[in-house]
Amino acid sequence: MTVQITQVILNGVLLGGLYAAMAAGFSLVWGVLNIINIMQGSAVVLGSYAAYFAWRYTGLNPLLAIAVAGPLLFGVGWVLQRFLIQRVVAAPVLITLVFTFGLDLVLNNAMISFFSADYRKIEGVFPTAPLTFGALTLPVDRLLAAVVGIGAAFALHLYLHKSRLGRAIVAVRMDRQTAELMGVRVELIYAMTFGLGLAMAGIAGCLLAAIFPTSPLNSAHYLHIAFVACVLGGLGSVLGAVAGGLLLGIVESLGSLFVGAEYGTTVAAVILLLMLFTRPQGLMGRAGYE
Amino acid sequence: MNSRVLLAIAIAVIGAAACAGLPLILAGEPYLMRLVTMFSLLLVLAASWNIVGGFTGYPSFATGAFFGLGAYAAAILQARGLDWRLALIVAGIAGAVLAAPVGYGVLRLRGHYFAVASLMLGAILRELTTGWSDLTGGGMGLTVAGAGGDPERLAAFSLRISLALAVLTVLLGAAIKWSRLGFGLDCIRMNETAAAGIGVDAQKLKTYAFTLSSVTSAIAGGVYAGWIGYIDPTDVYDVMWSVKPIVAVLLGGVGTILGPIIGAALFVALEEIVWRNVLSFSSGGLGVLIVLLLLVLPAGVLPSLVSRKRRP
Image (tube, rainbow over all chains, first blue to last red; front, side):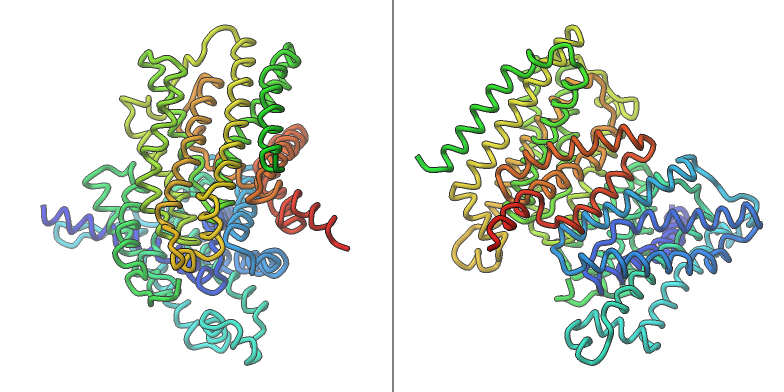
């Protein structure tokens, strides 16, 4: 039993690494722009398609496809924010939510039209034999994907805290007006932030494509995961999103052991509500940031 | 008599006349009957959403969850031999029984937190419905007897009952808006902390509003189930049932009495145009419509016209 539980928690950590990448960009956009990006799930799926087609036509390893999907999604995000979302960015919550919902419908439906809703799977890239440690097993593809996912989130964290542009993003998150007075061009920072958010989604999409089948039908599930992980970890902190993603992965694995995998969203929602009522600022968030 | 009472009486009279007359006028026009029924159901959901999203200012995405719950409650009860009228009433009660505790909890959250928590409610109910297949038929869905009979009679009957429900929901909205409850909801929308400061029991009033709006949404689900005759989880818990009413109210005017009516009519008209012309891209077309709407007419059609008129 102990071995089984350990194995399940290990699986959860590996899953959580993917969730961390998915939630990091979502959390960044939410914190800086005060926008819930409903499109995040579809952006993840778009990243998966980039990896899938790169593999299909050139045989590129999906973990290396992040070099393609990241910049691609960054561009999409930058343009969307600069020319469309910027016009409603100061509007009430309802308006920005419905707006990104509309964008999500367009992107999701476009993907269904172009790629169809069929599930597509990348195969034969990674060795199928898992690594074994005593009684515990680690699938190679999942391990690599989780490492890259957490690594990408840490890279984002370092970028925000060490680079000049990253510092500007953090400054805008903390106090938009003062940042503006200090000469930060807020509109460009917003575009940059949204671009980074979608780039993280694209990277997460590549990692997911390495393991799971890809279909536009997955996007709502990914959105829920990003949201729950982000709230669990605490808003406004990339490392919080990583912690939230890992926690969610573990809870989901344990949940599928005890109540069945088909109730994934329900388990996540219960955990989320418990967290919101007991510690609304999240695991690592600071109170007052919401 | 003041203008509010006149407006309410006008809505009631026109609604009653439409309920009585439209099924006769449109007899032999199944396409138009379907369109008006669709409009009526959308109006029920839009006017219901307006109570929470418009009057109270809480961006709820839970309309579809209660719509689906009502559809399943009515369908399951009818399959057990309950009369369809009773089944609709019980569907409404089921909506209230779920909405009161859920609302009491979730309405503590504000802004984005509330929005996404309400969005997840539909996904949760869908999972539970699919999982509990002994009762709900799972992913296979359920066949609903409804009012039975031949298709033409069923169409006329569904048109009548959904229109009647729509009129009642609009009147319910008006009654709430012009009552003490509506005043309290107004205060909550403008500044919840200040409202609590002057003695508005925000938690209680928000839960009332959420529960009332869920009852009408759930009954609408029951009517839909009887009309369509077959339901499955992906259909009745579709997130579109939450989004379309919001878009309709945004089209017409948020927080107004006539806004949902105008918005639902415009929405059905626009949707039909999109459907006919770009069938394979229908929900994407809706997305384009949303984006354009929010960029061009952010306040909705009705307030935009009014404010244009008032401008000197």
